[in-house]
Amino acid sequence: MNIFSFVFKRLLNGILVMIGVVFIIFMLFNVLPVNSARMTLGQRADQASVEAIEREFRLNLPWYSRLVLYFNDISPVSFNKLSDPSSPTWLDETEISYTKVLTIGETSLVLKAPYLGKSFQTRRKVSEILGEKIYPTAVLALSAMALASFIGIIMGVFAAIKQYSFWDNSILVLSTFGISQPAYFSGIILAMIFGYYLSDITGLNVRGSLTDVDIMGDTIYVWKNLWLPMIALGIRPISIITQLTRSAMLDVLNQDFIRTANAKGLSRAKVIFKHALRNAMNPVVTSISGWFAALLTGAFFIEKVFDYKGLGLQTIESLLTFDFPVVMGSVLFVAFIFVIMNMLTDLLYSVLDPRVVIKG
Image (cartoon, rainbow, N blue to C red; front, side, top):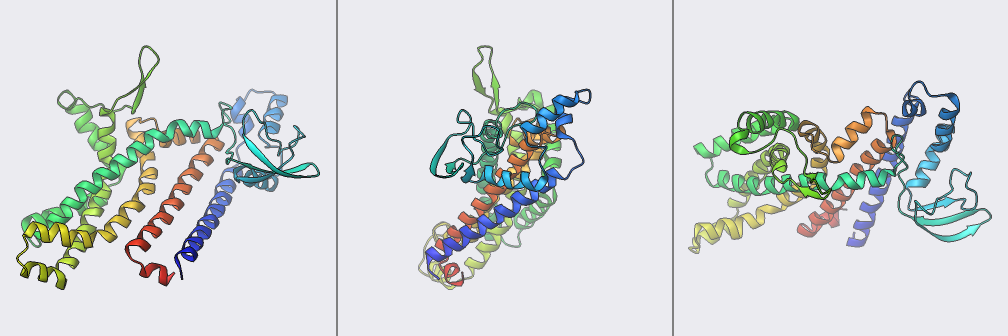
């Protein structure tokens, strides 16, 4: 199997996974015994207002019709009736940019960005709401991953070269403890100790977001509010990367080329960092690349603990107010990141180990 067939196969698998995720998410939020229109307007709303909301959000249509329309909305290639504003597939040019490819009768084939619908509560586009919240969550996930990679690799290497020593055993105990702790539990403990009891010393807050608004209305960054969520989110990947690095290093240190390097009189540091660590990084790098998407989902709980206004907190608040389009859009975005990261991990592993491409 050549590299092009390998990439095509992974791409096709990713598309099929996303189709399955869209179907499951849609069914989950459209079979609930909840009148979304009534929840949006309140229990005292008159029937005419409820029916207007149902027409606006297509809630008056059967679920299978809405499913087809939802797939049509999120697809970058869709079929729409552009000349009929009353049609469920009509596109408002003031809200959705599109390029018409061809027209057959009243139906046009268009190219557009995926459309996730509007919020029940604010009538804003879901993509705009999520776009405002993605940056703080991405900063949190990336910083946690960077912290976990740096500390995890150092601890793993140190444990490997000190195998069976007090330090090795201590690192293994700590990493096992870290793996067993849920992120939200670690977040609560860190917030209580460093954000409450020791706040006068640390200067950290129990709750706070990455961004704030000053008296002039300008956005400012409060970087100290990133520390505790970042550490809480990074504890588990630190532990996993530590154990993975230690295991990979021990395997490499027993290889013949390491013995040859030692026999040549190379320094211990050069043998470990230039030869051993370089060859032990394959599984570690692939693990790190696959952890980013997982940290996005882990950030949901951390953001709630620290009131960190990102994608996770927005999703939880939308779920509590039955704002299903926002919740569905958030879940689909995270699923898309998972698929992309898995594809990139497979491609990265195929570069590091070409035998993967041959096996397919």
